[in-house]
Length: 323
Image (cartoon, rainbow, N blue to C red; front, side, top):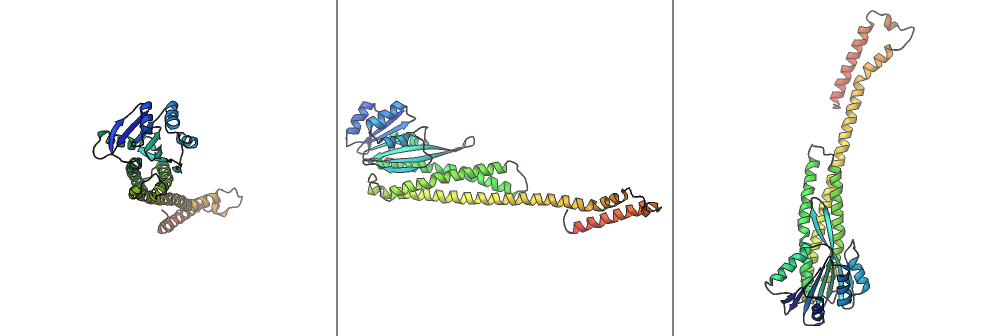
């Protein structure tokens, strides 16, 4: 589906134009155009990316092919960026959606396969035509990226809640067989988030330094603020990951301690039964000459010896706190 917004002098002049009308608008150098490709068909991709804007084939290939990492490429008349939006729910856990941007002097083209909250929110704001509109596509790109970064906050809140739940279970006396699975899953979420945030911060940092001629100097402070927000996100994710690894270490130590307690109990049980086993094994021998069996008090002596030695062993182990 193709959505379009046309701006003139900071005001919304039209939207969702037909391709032929959009072609005329793109040729008009006094207008700002935002074209959003929302899960487009192959024909729509070819019509817009190739026929309307004449983007480089390599840029189009990078756009339509899913990429696991953000990136930025400078071309002669535009800037191509690959970014990632995030979403989080209890069913699918961590999910990412690629958002590709073509940023020129008078146009912004966005491409995504699934609906994005950041794109929908910005489109709704522009449709209401409340307040001054964007006077440049770089301002549109910043607003879009800012909303995209803001959507990381609910994700971090969800992951933080899961982290606190794991820590509570680890520090309690209750054993949870599913804890290891949850630990590994949350750890994977943190690792995936860090893999996205760090290169995305590098992409925004390149824009914030003014390396691209597509970003006007007066917008550099806005992109620097966006870069700082991503840096804080990365630091937060790193801190959460360290807390998770500490919880994992505590869990492993608790598991090792519980195993040691079990081994200690079995060892104590073996030591207590040792006198009885030794005496029973001795009198169970099939020897011809055993003076102990000829004594009328042989069984009594054997029983008393077994009982006394067992009690002494139990008292000794009790003092050693083996049980």
